[in-house]
Amino acid sequence: MKNKIIENIHNYMSENDILRDYETYEQMSVIDRYVELKCLEDAIKKEYYTSFLASIAILYINYGLLYAKSQLSNEVFNNFAIFWGLEYSQEVIDDIGFIVPQIYYTKKAKVLLEYTNNPIDIKKTKVYKYVENLIDLNEFSCYIGESEEGEYTQYFFIPKILEQHIFNHQ
Image (cartoon, one colour):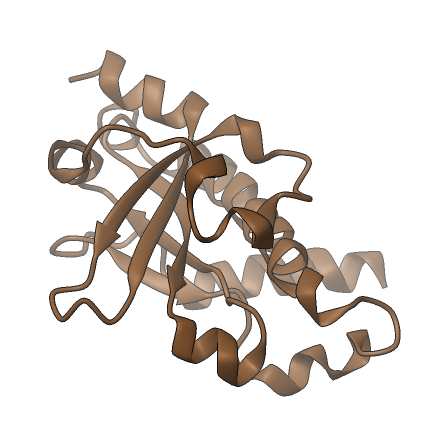
């Protein structure tokens, strides 16, 4: 079973072609369908699903960083970013009870970071209660963005080690 998990992670990341040169950035969901979570109903309270799924996102990010570092030249890797995010929408939370994390990736990290605001304190956000149980949360800088229509707020979690690497190679 362990080998199947590793194979599934590799296949999912490969299917999403995280090393391709996109115009800005691309994203993929941690899960494809909510039915995938049915097996958790008797094990984990729904209020913890976001934390559980964010842990999986972090696993994908760690894999993605190692994959990129192994496959890309140093010059290209210096401009690569992979991070996770949450779109806070009260309507979605009322509907399903949790937030499904997204994974974002780009080879234009410097441009992306130029458009981000200063990091914010995650503890002062609407999403903190959904991720406060994450062990690795302090390893990420949190940035915020609003949708143009104001329907949702996006929170982006960029690994601090990657963020520092990108800033050091500008």
